[in-house]
Image (cartoon, rainbow, N blue to C red; front, side, top):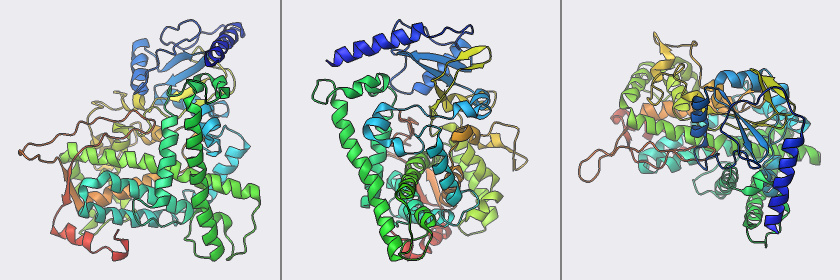
Length: 511
């Protein structure tokens, strides 16, 4: 029966593809298509952004076309093409494709990062910007500094667990900003719940993992039919998603009613005296959904960036030394705060180079074209999935000579940040109307954490039991948010003065 559904789907796809109105303009170049399935067999199962980059070089084009079983995929391999289409033509390029597995079967369609460009999306984005916009730093910056100090103490006590400590820090910051919840330890039930839900979502979002995304008609196949195990998996993931959406929100509402909630996105939305707020069901649903977005968008991405920073400092100690010289000169024996970042151009350059050297979202985040378009003499079909390939952008040798090397100096001239080079921030957080609304929070979190760690610690390659230096592999995971594969390093206080700084932090912040 499942095979029958698949055959029918293929025939319908063929009919649609070949009987639709033909265009005079050619499609962008790309690998040769097979009948019916197009490039379905060409799309790699992992590290697809590297293959997209290779195709761009092979066909001499910054824009590539793929046909995956009748669905057009357009890959943009340069910042220029992404700006031209996703920024300057954002009116038609700002929607999102629907993932049958993630949005329909598991139920993540409420997450405004996945919502098509419509009224609901605009309302929730406005709601986020109203309460957590760039001008309002009072909610996020104190929490970033608080948890950065906790991270320093954790690194002092168990430096070998740096990845776990970083994950706790970013999760605690985002959940605290959203719900006013203070997470005391890395196995806090709310954090565990959020991380599990996010892990499920990211796993389900891996391109090509579930056939139902290529052939949505399969969503009607009962789970007891052989080959329909994705239905059972989706049910399990949906249960955990609902728990994540519900549990911290209800905790926050209870504290609002009691008047004990810490300032947060929830409290700002409900802003009223103890027990006196009145909000409609629709408004509560919107607040609930937008709050749920904050952890999903901000936690794992910041983890990936900060782990890349640790890896870079391990592999390029001379860059670490230059940053520490700058920090010592500006801070003169104290820990940094947010007001110091503008006086630390080399640290800012490290942040930029971290985001360029290993893009957090190397395959970008898909857009969806709502009507036919023409670009550079090519026909771009309506309903195409548009992928901006951050990996290719980060490897553009005209912008970034020697791209595999970690060189913060590429952003510095005469001791100042320069503007005549493509800024990685131009492609790290998306394009057009779908650019990440929490970009400023991510940047302040990453910046203050990097500055704090470099002020207090030295990060070097470890020595094994035989006295040999252990070199990290520099391998990364093939996942939508790409992380360094687990590696070892030695993290120690830079000096007795640095040790004293860490120990002087408030005992309240000790985990």
